[in-house]
Image (cartoon, rainbow over the protein chains, first blue to last red):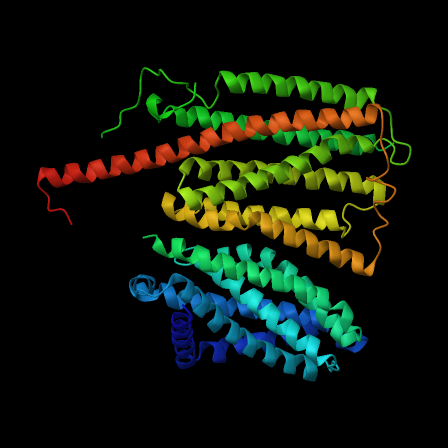
Length: 222
Length: 43
Length: 255
Protein backbone atom coordinates (compact mmCIF):
# COMPACT_ATOMS: atom_id res chain seq x y z
CA UNK A 1 0.00 0.00 0.00
CA UNK A 2 2.77 2.40 0.95
CA UNK A 3 4.71 1.50 -2.19
CA UNK A 4 1.65 2.13 -4.35
CA UNK A 5 1.12 5.42 -2.56
CA UNK A 6 4.67 6.56 -3.27
CA UNK A 7 4.29 5.48 -6.89
CA UNK A 8 1.12 7.52 -7.38
CA UNK A 9 2.52 10.51 -5.50
CA UNK A 10 5.67 10.42 -7.61
CA UNK A 11 3.64 10.22 -10.80
CA UNK A 12 1.42 13.17 -9.83
CA UNK A 13 4.31 15.34 -8.74
CA UNK A 14 6.28 14.55 -11.90
CA UNK A 15 3.27 15.47 -14.01
CA UNK A 16 2.81 18.66 -12.04
CA UNK A 17 6.48 19.52 -12.36
CA UNK A 18 6.52 18.97 -16.11
CA UNK A 19 3.34 20.92 -16.82
CA UNK A 20 4.46 23.83 -14.60
CA UNK A 21 0.80 24.81 -14.04
CA UNK A 22 1.19 24.95 -10.28
CA UNK A 23 4.32 27.01 -10.64
CA UNK A 24 3.10 29.34 -13.36
CA UNK A 25 -0.55 29.78 -12.35
CA UNK A 26 -1.43 28.61 -8.85
CA UNK A 27 1.53 30.25 -7.09
CA UNK A 28 1.00 33.66 -8.75
CA UNK A 29 -2.71 33.36 -7.89
CA UNK A 30 -1.83 32.84 -4.22
CA UNK A 31 0.30 35.99 -4.22
CA UNK A 32 -2.46 37.83 -6.04
CA UNK A 33 -4.89 36.96 -3.23
CA UNK A 34 -2.48 38.48 -0.71
CA UNK A 35 -2.28 41.70 -2.71
CA UNK A 36 -6.07 41.80 -3.07
CA UNK A 37 -6.50 41.54 0.70
CA UNK A 38 -4.25 44.58 1.05
CA UNK A 39 -6.50 46.49 -1.35
CA UNK A 40 -9.64 45.39 0.50
CA UNK A 41 -8.30 46.19 3.97
CA UNK A 42 -6.52 49.48 4.42
CA UNK A 43 -2.85 48.56 5.04
CA UNK A 44 -2.17 51.74 7.01
CA UNK A 45 -4.47 50.97 9.92
CA UNK A 46 -2.69 47.83 11.03
CA UNK A 47 -5.68 45.70 10.03
CA UNK A 48 -3.56 43.51 7.78
CA UNK A 49 -1.12 42.64 10.51
CA UNK A 50 -3.91 41.90 12.97
CA UNK A 51 -5.81 39.75 10.49
CA UNK A 52 -2.75 37.95 9.11
CA UNK A 53 -3.62 34.43 10.42
CA UNK A 54 -7.11 34.49 8.94
CA UNK A 55 -6.06 36.05 5.64
CA UNK A 56 -3.19 33.59 5.36
CA UNK A 57 -5.39 30.53 5.77
CA UNK A 58 -8.13 31.84 3.50
CA UNK A 59 -5.45 32.37 0.85
CA UNK A 60 -4.18 28.82 1.45
CA UNK A 61 -7.69 27.40 1.11
CA UNK A 62 -8.50 29.22 -2.11
CA UNK A 63 -5.22 28.58 -3.85
CA UNK A 64 -5.21 25.02 -2.52
CA UNK A 65 -8.63 24.55 -4.10
CA UNK A 66 -7.11 25.47 -7.44
CA UNK A 67 -4.31 22.95 -6.94
CA UNK A 68 -6.87 20.27 -6.06
CA UNK A 69 -9.04 20.97 -9.11
CA UNK A 70 -5.87 20.64 -11.13
CA UNK A 71 -4.90 17.33 -9.58
CA UNK A 72 -8.26 15.82 -10.55
CA UNK A 73 -8.52 17.30 -14.00
CA UNK A 74 -5.31 15.42 -14.84
CA UNK A 75 -7.01 12.26 -13.70
CA UNK A 76 -10.21 12.62 -15.69
CA UNK A 77 -8.45 13.45 -18.97
CA UNK A 78 -7.72 10.69 -21.49
CA UNK A 79 -9.47 7.95 -19.52
CA UNK A 80 -6.79 8.07 -16.86
CA UNK A 81 -9.30 7.03 -14.26
CA UNK A 82 -9.83 3.71 -16.00
CA UNK A 83 -6.11 3.24 -16.47
CA UNK A 84 -5.56 3.83 -12.77
CA UNK A 85 -8.33 1.42 -11.90
CA UNK A 86 -6.97 -1.29 -14.16
CA UNK A 87 -3.43 -0.81 -12.94
CA UNK A 88 -4.03 -3.17 -10.04
CA UNK A 89 -2.79 -0.63 -7.52
CA UNK A 90 -4.36 -0.75 -4.08
CA UNK A 91 -7.17 1.90 -4.00
CA UNK A 92 -6.06 2.93 -0.51
CA UNK A 93 -2.56 3.38 -1.90
CA UNK A 94 -3.86 5.53 -4.73
CA UNK A 95 -5.74 7.66 -2.23
CA UNK A 96 -2.73 8.09 0.05
CA UNK A 97 -0.51 8.86 -2.92
CA UNK A 98 -2.81 11.59 -4.10
CA UNK A 99 -3.01 12.98 -0.57
CA UNK A 100 0.78 13.09 -0.43
CA UNK A 101 1.08 14.82 -3.79
CA UNK A 102 -1.59 17.39 -2.93
CA UNK A 103 -0.12 17.84 0.55
CA UNK A 104 3.36 18.55 -0.79
CA UNK A 105 1.98 21.12 -3.21
CA UNK A 106 0.01 22.71 -0.38
CA UNK A 107 3.15 22.86 1.76
CA UNK A 108 5.01 24.61 -1.03
CA UNK A 109 2.13 27.08 -1.33
CA UNK A 110 2.14 27.64 2.42
CA UNK A 111 5.85 28.40 2.47
CA UNK A 112 5.39 30.86 -0.39
CA UNK A 113 2.41 32.52 1.32
CA UNK A 114 4.30 32.59 4.63
CA UNK A 115 7.13 34.51 3.03
CA UNK A 116 4.49 36.67 1.37
CA UNK A 117 2.74 37.71 4.58
CA UNK A 118 6.02 38.19 6.43
CA UNK A 119 7.25 40.57 3.73
CA UNK A 120 4.06 42.22 2.50
CA UNK A 121 2.14 42.51 5.77
CA UNK A 122 5.30 42.95 7.91
CA UNK A 123 3.98 40.42 10.40
CA UNK A 124 6.62 39.45 12.96
CA UNK A 125 6.90 35.66 13.08
CA UNK A 126 7.05 34.06 16.51
CA UNK A 127 6.18 30.70 18.05
CA UNK A 128 7.89 28.64 15.35
CA UNK A 129 7.11 25.20 16.75
CA UNK A 130 3.36 25.82 16.96
CA UNK A 131 3.35 27.44 13.52
CA UNK A 132 5.10 24.50 11.90
CA UNK A 133 3.04 21.81 13.64
CA UNK A 134 -0.20 23.66 12.86
CA UNK A 135 0.77 23.99 9.22
CA UNK A 136 1.66 20.29 8.97
CA UNK A 137 -1.54 19.03 10.60
CA UNK A 138 -3.77 21.48 8.71
CA UNK A 139 -2.11 20.47 5.46
CA UNK A 140 -2.79 16.78 6.05
CA UNK A 141 -6.42 17.58 6.92
CA UNK A 142 -6.94 19.77 3.85
CA UNK A 143 -5.21 17.32 1.53
CA UNK A 144 -7.10 14.28 2.84
CA UNK A 145 -10.54 15.92 2.79
CA UNK A 146 -9.77 17.60 -0.49
CA UNK A 147 -8.72 14.35 -2.15
CA UNK A 148 -11.76 12.46 -0.88
CA UNK A 149 -14.25 15.10 -2.02
CA UNK A 150 -12.20 15.64 -5.16
CA UNK A 151 -12.89 12.03 -6.12
CA UNK A 152 -16.57 12.42 -5.26
CA UNK A 153 -16.74 15.32 -7.71
CA UNK A 154 -14.30 13.88 -10.25
CA UNK A 155 -15.35 13.11 -13.78
CA UNK A 156 -18.55 15.15 -13.60
CA UNK A 157 -19.40 18.11 -15.76
CA UNK A 158 -20.22 20.15 -12.67
CA UNK A 159 -16.90 19.36 -11.00
CA UNK A 160 -15.60 22.91 -10.76
CA UNK A 161 -18.64 24.18 -8.92
CA UNK A 162 -19.38 21.07 -6.88
CA UNK A 163 -16.01 20.67 -5.20
CA UNK A 164 -15.97 24.05 -3.40
CA UNK A 165 -19.55 23.53 -2.21
CA UNK A 166 -18.66 20.14 -0.74
CA UNK A 167 -15.22 20.95 0.57
CA UNK A 168 -15.32 24.42 2.06
CA UNK A 169 -18.01 23.77 4.73
CA UNK A 170 -16.10 20.68 5.76
CA UNK A 171 -12.87 22.65 6.00
CA UNK A 172 -14.45 25.43 8.05
CA UNK A 173 -13.27 23.80 11.31
CA UNK A 174 -9.75 23.57 9.86
CA UNK A 175 -9.88 27.26 8.99
CA UNK A 176 -11.09 28.14 12.49
CA UNK A 177 -8.51 25.87 14.13
CA UNK A 178 -5.50 26.88 12.07
CA UNK A 179 -6.34 30.57 12.36
CA UNK A 180 -6.73 30.40 16.14
CA UNK A 181 -3.53 28.39 16.48
CA UNK A 182 -1.62 30.91 14.35
CA UNK A 183 -3.05 33.76 16.39
CA UNK A 184 -1.88 32.02 19.54
CA UNK A 185 1.59 31.51 18.08
CA UNK A 186 1.93 35.06 16.80
CA UNK A 187 0.20 36.65 19.79
CA UNK A 188 2.51 34.98 22.30
CA UNK A 189 0.37 32.44 24.20
CA UNK A 190 1.12 29.22 22.32
CA UNK A 191 -0.57 27.05 24.96
CA UNK A 192 -3.96 28.20 23.65
CA UNK A 193 -3.12 26.89 20.22
CA UNK A 194 -2.50 23.22 20.99
CA UNK A 195 -6.15 22.13 21.52
CA UNK A 196 -6.84 23.40 18.00
CA UNK A 197 -3.99 21.31 16.64
CA UNK A 198 -5.62 18.32 18.33
CA UNK A 199 -8.98 19.06 16.72
CA UNK A 200 -7.39 19.35 13.30
CA UNK A 201 -5.57 16.09 13.96
CA UNK A 202 -8.94 14.41 14.53
CA UNK A 203 -10.20 15.78 11.20
CA UNK A 204 -7.06 14.59 9.42
CA UNK A 205 -7.37 11.08 10.86
CA UNK A 206 -11.11 10.92 10.08
CA UNK A 207 -10.58 11.81 6.44
CA UNK A 208 -7.61 9.53 5.96
CA UNK A 209 -9.60 6.62 7.39
CA UNK A 210 -12.69 7.53 5.31
CA UNK A 211 -10.53 7.83 2.21
CA UNK A 212 -8.69 4.54 2.75
CA UNK A 213 -11.97 2.67 3.07
CA UNK A 214 -14.15 4.74 0.75
CA UNK A 215 -11.78 5.02 -2.19
CA UNK A 216 -12.26 1.43 -3.31
CA UNK A 217 -16.06 1.67 -3.81
CA UNK A 218 -15.69 5.06 -5.49
CA UNK A 219 -13.17 3.74 -8.00
CA UNK A 220 -15.24 0.66 -8.85
CA UNK A 221 -18.02 2.48 -10.66
CA UNK A 222 -18.12 2.59 -14.43
CA UNK B 1 -45.25 43.09 22.22
CA UNK B 2 -43.29 40.76 19.94
CA UNK B 3 -46.47 39.13 18.66
CA UNK B 4 -45.42 40.10 15.16
CA UNK B 5 -42.33 37.90 15.35
CA UNK B 6 -44.29 35.04 16.90
CA UNK B 7 -47.00 35.10 14.24
CA UNK B 8 -44.44 35.48 11.45
CA UNK B 9 -42.42 32.49 12.58
CA UNK B 10 -45.48 30.27 13.08
CA UNK B 11 -46.76 31.22 9.64
CA UNK B 12 -43.38 30.40 8.15
CA UNK B 13 -43.27 27.03 9.93
CA UNK B 14 -46.77 25.97 8.93
CA UNK B 15 -46.48 27.51 5.48
CA UNK B 16 -43.21 25.87 4.55
CA UNK B 17 -44.19 22.46 5.92
CA UNK B 18 -47.54 22.72 4.16
CA UNK B 19 -46.04 23.79 0.85
CA UNK B 20 -43.44 21.03 0.97
CA UNK B 21 -46.08 18.41 1.85
CA UNK B 22 -48.38 19.48 -0.97
CA UNK B 23 -45.50 19.51 -3.47
CA UNK B 24 -44.41 16.03 -2.36
CA UNK B 25 -47.90 14.55 -2.53
CA UNK B 26 -48.70 16.10 -5.91
CA UNK B 27 -45.44 14.95 -7.43
CA UNK B 28 -46.09 11.50 -5.99
CA UNK B 29 -49.50 11.37 -7.67
CA UNK B 30 -48.04 12.43 -10.99
CA UNK B 31 -45.24 9.87 -10.87
CA UNK B 32 -47.56 7.12 -9.66
CA UNK B 33 -49.31 7.21 -13.03
CA UNK B 34 -46.04 6.38 -14.78
CA UNK B 35 -45.13 3.43 -12.61
CA UNK B 36 -46.95 0.11 -12.94
CA UNK B 37 -48.92 -0.73 -9.80
CA UNK B 38 -46.95 -3.87 -8.99
CA UNK B 39 -43.87 -1.71 -8.45
CA UNK B 40 -45.63 0.40 -5.84
CA UNK B 41 -45.21 -1.81 -2.87
CA UNK B 42 -47.28 -0.03 -0.24
CA UNK B 43 -50.97 -0.18 0.35
CA UNK C 1 -40.14 -5.27 -21.37
CA UNK C 2 -42.15 -2.65 -23.16
CA UNK C 3 -43.91 -0.55 -20.55
CA UNK C 4 -47.44 0.59 -21.07
CA UNK C 5 -49.28 3.24 -19.19
CA UNK C 6 -51.40 1.40 -16.65
CA UNK C 7 -55.04 2.12 -17.30
CA UNK C 8 -56.47 -0.02 -14.52
CA UNK C 9 -54.66 0.99 -11.39
CA UNK C 10 -54.85 -1.63 -8.71
CA UNK C 11 -52.14 -0.26 -6.46
CA UNK C 12 -52.30 3.09 -4.70
CA UNK C 13 -52.38 6.05 -7.06
CA UNK C 14 -50.30 8.25 -4.77
CA UNK C 15 -47.61 8.08 -2.13
CA UNK C 16 -50.33 7.74 0.51
CA UNK C 17 -51.54 4.60 2.22
CA UNK C 18 -53.85 3.73 5.09
CA UNK C 19 -50.98 4.02 7.56
CA UNK C 20 -49.86 7.43 6.34
CA UNK C 21 -53.44 8.71 6.35
CA UNK C 22 -53.71 7.78 10.03
CA UNK C 23 -50.30 9.31 10.69
CA UNK C 24 -51.23 12.46 8.81
CA UNK C 25 -54.49 12.79 10.72
CA UNK C 26 -52.66 12.41 14.04
CA UNK C 27 -50.13 15.03 12.93
CA UNK C 28 -52.90 17.48 12.04
CA UNK C 29 -54.62 16.95 15.39
CA UNK C 30 -51.32 17.43 17.21
CA UNK C 31 -50.63 20.61 15.26
CA UNK C 32 -54.07 21.87 16.28
CA UNK C 33 -53.34 21.14 19.93
CA UNK C 34 -49.97 22.84 19.53
CA UNK C 35 -51.61 25.99 18.18
CA UNK C 36 -54.12 25.91 21.04
CA UNK C 37 -51.51 25.56 23.77
CA UNK C 38 -48.58 27.34 22.16
CA UNK C 39 -50.38 30.44 20.98
CA UNK C 40 -53.41 30.74 23.26
CA UNK C 41 -53.37 28.86 26.54
CA UNK C 42 -49.73 29.11 27.61
CA UNK C 43 -48.58 32.30 29.34
CA UNK C 44 -45.86 34.68 28.22
CA UNK C 45 -42.41 34.09 29.66
CA UNK C 46 -41.19 36.33 32.48
CA UNK C 47 -37.94 37.30 30.75
CA UNK C 48 -38.57 36.59 27.06
CA UNK C 49 -42.17 37.79 26.82
CA UNK C 50 -44.30 36.50 23.99
CA UNK C 51 -41.35 35.48 21.86
CA UNK C 52 -40.96 32.33 23.96
CA UNK C 53 -43.81 30.98 21.80
CA UNK C 54 -41.35 30.73 18.90
CA UNK C 55 -39.43 28.16 20.95
CA UNK C 56 -42.36 25.70 20.83
CA UNK C 57 -41.74 25.21 17.10
CA UNK C 58 -38.05 26.12 16.97
CA UNK C 59 -36.63 23.55 19.39
CA UNK C 60 -38.56 20.53 18.01
CA UNK C 61 -37.63 21.53 14.44
CA UNK C 62 -33.95 21.59 15.37
CA UNK C 63 -34.30 18.17 16.99
CA UNK C 64 -35.96 16.48 14.01
CA UNK C 65 -33.44 18.13 11.67
CA UNK C 66 -30.71 16.31 13.59
CA UNK C 67 -32.71 13.06 13.44
CA UNK C 68 -32.92 13.50 9.67
CA UNK C 69 -29.13 13.84 9.51
CA UNK C 70 -28.71 10.65 11.52
CA UNK C 71 -31.04 8.87 9.10
CA UNK C 72 -28.89 10.10 6.23
CA UNK C 73 -25.66 8.87 7.74
CA UNK C 74 -27.21 5.56 8.87
CA UNK C 75 -28.75 4.99 5.44
CA UNK C 76 -25.47 5.83 3.72
CA UNK C 77 -23.52 3.40 5.90
CA UNK C 78 -25.96 0.57 5.27
CA UNK C 79 -26.05 1.34 1.55
CA UNK C 80 -22.26 1.24 1.28
CA UNK C 81 -22.12 -1.91 3.37
CA UNK C 82 -25.03 -3.96 2.04
CA UNK C 83 -25.78 -2.19 -1.28
CA UNK C 84 -29.33 -1.73 -0.03
CA UNK C 85 -31.19 0.65 -2.31
CA UNK C 86 -34.00 0.94 0.26
CA UNK C 87 -31.60 2.46 2.79
CA UNK C 88 -30.10 4.74 0.17
CA UNK C 89 -33.55 6.19 -0.42
CA UNK C 90 -34.03 6.57 3.35
CA UNK C 91 -30.79 8.56 3.41
CA UNK C 92 -32.01 10.80 0.61
CA UNK C 93 -35.44 11.35 2.18
CA UNK C 94 -33.79 12.07 5.53
CA UNK C 95 -31.48 14.68 4.03
CA UNK C 96 -34.19 16.51 2.17
CA UNK C 97 -36.60 16.66 5.11
CA UNK C 98 -33.70 17.60 7.40
CA UNK C 99 -32.92 20.48 5.06
CA UNK C 100 -36.49 21.74 5.34
CA UNK C 101 -36.36 21.64 9.13
CA UNK C 102 -32.89 23.20 9.25
CA UNK C 103 -34.19 26.15 7.26
CA UNK C 104 -37.17 26.38 9.61
CA UNK C 105 -34.82 26.26 12.60
CA UNK C 106 -32.64 29.04 11.21
CA UNK C 107 -35.52 31.32 10.25
CA UNK C 108 -37.38 30.89 13.54
CA UNK C 109 -34.09 31.29 15.42
CA UNK C 110 -33.47 34.59 13.68
CA UNK C 111 -37.03 35.76 14.33
CA UNK C 112 -36.53 34.86 17.97
CA UNK C 113 -33.17 36.61 18.09
CA UNK C 114 -34.46 39.93 16.77
CA UNK C 115 -36.70 40.74 19.77
CA UNK C 116 -34.43 38.95 22.26
CA UNK C 117 -30.97 40.13 21.23
CA UNK C 118 -31.98 43.10 19.08
CA UNK C 119 -30.40 41.63 15.93
CA UNK C 120 -31.34 38.86 13.54
CA UNK C 121 -27.96 37.25 13.60
CA UNK C 122 -25.24 36.90 16.18
CA UNK C 123 -22.23 34.67 15.76
CA UNK C 124 -23.57 32.42 18.44
CA UNK C 125 -22.27 28.87 18.48
CA UNK C 126 -25.66 27.24 17.91
CA UNK C 127 -26.73 29.59 15.14
CA UNK C 128 -23.41 29.32 13.34
CA UNK C 129 -23.23 25.56 13.50
CA UNK C 130 -26.83 25.29 12.27
CA UNK C 131 -25.93 27.44 9.28
CA UNK C 132 -22.97 25.14 8.58
CA UNK C 133 -25.29 22.14 8.91
CA UNK C 134 -27.51 23.62 6.21
CA UNK C 135 -24.51 24.04 3.90
CA UNK C 136 -23.39 20.46 4.50
CA UNK C 137 -26.90 19.18 3.73
CA UNK C 138 -27.05 21.26 0.55
CA UNK C 139 -23.75 19.69 -0.50
CA UNK C 140 -25.18 16.20 0.01
CA UNK C 141 -28.33 17.06 -1.95
CA UNK C 142 -26.25 18.58 -4.76
CA UNK C 143 -24.39 15.28 -5.16
CA UNK C 144 -27.51 13.16 -4.80
CA UNK C 145 -29.31 15.13 -7.52
CA UNK C 146 -26.46 15.02 -10.03
CA UNK C 147 -27.56 14.40 -13.58
CA UNK C 148 -25.89 10.99 -13.74
CA UNK C 149 -26.65 7.28 -13.44
CA UNK C 150 -28.29 6.09 -10.25
CA UNK C 151 -25.23 4.08 -9.21
CA UNK C 152 -22.89 7.03 -9.66
CA UNK C 153 -25.12 9.45 -7.78
CA UNK C 154 -25.96 7.04 -5.00
CA UNK C 155 -22.42 5.93 -4.31
CA UNK C 156 -20.93 9.39 -4.28
CA UNK C 157 -23.79 10.79 -2.22
CA UNK C 158 -23.38 7.93 0.23
CA UNK C 159 -19.74 8.89 0.83
CA UNK C 160 -20.84 12.46 1.54
CA UNK C 161 -23.74 11.22 3.67
CA UNK C 162 -21.49 8.89 5.63
CA UNK C 163 -19.38 11.87 6.69
CA UNK C 164 -22.38 14.12 7.40
CA UNK C 165 -22.79 13.38 11.11
CA UNK C 166 -19.02 13.36 11.87
CA UNK C 167 -18.75 16.69 10.06
CA UNK C 168 -21.66 18.14 11.97
CA UNK C 169 -20.07 17.06 15.24
CA UNK C 170 -16.67 18.51 14.34
CA UNK C 171 -18.18 21.77 13.14
CA UNK C 172 -20.26 21.99 16.30
CA UNK C 173 -17.21 21.39 18.52
CA UNK C 174 -15.00 23.86 16.69
CA UNK C 175 -17.63 26.57 16.63
CA UNK C 176 -18.28 26.04 20.34
CA UNK C 177 -14.60 26.49 21.13
CA UNK C 178 -14.32 29.37 18.72
CA UNK C 179 -17.01 31.35 20.51
CA UNK C 180 -16.25 30.34 24.10
CA UNK C 181 -12.48 30.76 24.17
CA UNK C 182 -12.77 34.47 23.58
CA UNK C 183 -16.06 35.41 25.17
CA UNK C 184 -18.24 33.81 27.74
CA UNK C 185 -21.61 32.55 26.55
CA UNK C 186 -23.73 35.14 28.32
CA UNK C 187 -26.22 35.58 25.51
CA UNK C 188 -28.22 32.50 26.28
CA UNK C 189 -28.07 32.61 30.05
CA UNK C 190 -31.27 34.62 30.35
CA UNK C 191 -32.84 33.15 27.26
CA UNK C 192 -33.16 29.52 26.30
CA UNK C 193 -31.79 27.98 29.43
CA UNK C 194 -34.01 29.71 31.94
CA UNK C 195 -36.25 27.21 33.63
CA UNK C 196 -39.67 26.65 32.19
CA UNK C 197 -42.55 24.87 33.83
CA UNK C 198 -46.22 24.09 33.79
CA UNK C 199 -48.16 25.02 30.70
CA UNK C 200 -45.05 26.22 28.92
CA UNK C 201 -43.35 22.88 29.38
CA UNK C 202 -46.50 21.16 28.16
CA UNK C 203 -46.60 23.39 25.08
CA UNK C 204 -43.01 22.50 24.28
CA UNK C 205 -43.86 18.83 24.78
CA UNK C 206 -46.81 19.18 22.39
CA UNK C 207 -44.46 20.82 19.93
CA UNK C 208 -42.16 17.80 20.05
CA UNK C 209 -45.06 15.40 19.47
CA UNK C 210 -46.58 17.41 16.63
CA UNK C 211 -43.33 18.13 14.80
CA UNK C 212 -42.17 14.53 15.19
CA UNK C 213 -45.43 13.26 13.66
CA UNK C 214 -45.09 15.72 10.80
CA UNK C 215 -41.48 14.61 10.34
CA UNK C 216 -42.47 10.94 10.21
CA UNK C 217 -45.25 11.62 7.73
CA UNK C 218 -42.90 13.64 5.50
CA UNK C 219 -40.16 11.00 5.62
CA UNK C 220 -42.56 8.24 4.53
CA UNK C 221 -43.97 10.28 1.69
CA UNK C 222 -40.60 11.58 0.54
CA UNK C 223 -39.21 8.05 0.64
CA UNK C 224 -42.03 6.74 -1.53
CA UNK C 225 -41.60 9.66 -3.90
CA UNK C 226 -37.89 8.88 -4.20
CA UNK C 227 -38.80 5.25 -4.87
CA UNK C 228 -41.15 6.32 -7.66
CA UNK C 229 -38.49 8.65 -9.08
CA UNK C 230 -36.01 5.79 -9.35
CA UNK C 231 -38.64 3.51 -10.90
CA UNK C 232 -39.53 6.11 -13.51
CA UNK C 233 -35.88 6.67 -14.28
CA UNK C 234 -35.05 2.98 -14.78
CA UNK C 235 -38.33 2.62 -16.69
CA UNK C 236 -37.22 5.42 -18.97
CA UNK C 237 -33.97 3.58 -19.51
CA UNK C 238 -35.89 0.42 -20.38
CA UNK C 239 -37.90 2.33 -22.97
CA UNK C 240 -34.74 3.75 -24.53
CA UNK C 241 -33.09 0.32 -24.69
CA UNK C 242 -36.22 -1.24 -26.17
CA UNK C 243 -36.35 1.46 -28.82
CA UNK C 244 -32.72 0.93 -29.75
CA UNK C 245 -33.31 -2.81 -30.04
CA UNK C 246 -36.34 -2.22 -32.23
CA UNK C 247 -34.34 0.04 -34.50
CA UNK C 248 -31.58 -2.54 -34.77
CA UNK C 249 -34.07 -5.29 -35.64
CA UNK C 250 -35.62 -3.29 -38.46
CA UNK C 251 -32.38 -3.66 -40.31
CA UNK C 252 -30.23 -0.67 -39.55
CA UNK C 253 -26.73 -1.52 -38.48
CA UNK C 254 -26.46 -1.10 -34.76
CA UNK C 255 -23.40 0.91 -33.74
